Length: 150
Image (cartoon, rainbow, N blue to C red):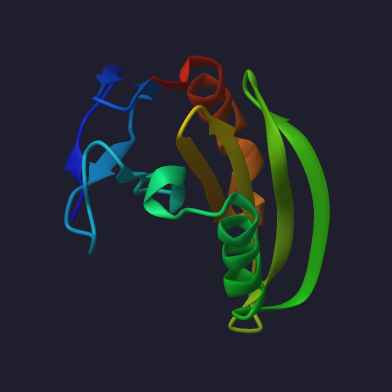
């Protein structure tokens, strides 16, 4: 269960960002690491924001990581739509904006973006029921504008 937090400036070893009001950090996920693998969730609408930071020197291959994220998501949806994008916040990289049906019912929107900075590879995920994604566009924009990889 997420712990409720609001209007917080998150400042970690590897990144910083503004956490929108009403969002909570999920600390009970497998692999949770406050500096390299974090999920923030808006519990009322099931929107989430995920950060994964890995090192190239540890063997991370950016293209493989992005394709793995894309292919994994496409395995759980039907009627998928996929579009490319190359900018998230102030970062340039490669991303996929995807939408599809989960469990043949609800449309889900899933945005995966990858960028590299020095030895680090950062994967960003924004995911929400498609009908709720636009309701929280301001929250996602707050995160995009404030996120900094250190």
